[in-house]
Amino acid sequence: MKTEVDVFECQECVLTFAIEKTDGLLNIVCPVCQSAEMLEDKGPATMIGGDSDA
Ligand SMILES: [Zn+2]
Image 1 (cartoon, protein in one colour):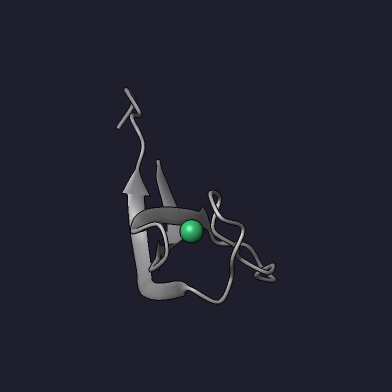
Image 2 (cartoon, rainbow, N blue to C red):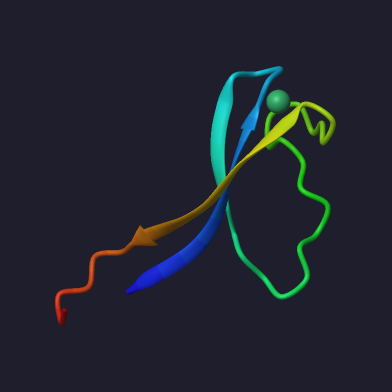
């Protein structure tokens, strides 16, 4: 099972996190400092979950 995500890095906290893609991207904020201004978009990524059937 694969999940499309967008990866962001907060320049303030030096925190990298991924947000699952949705049809309409919400206002993305850092989960730590709640800032949107310090976020750097690192681009899309694919997370592969553990699927025993695969
Ligand atoms: Zn932050």
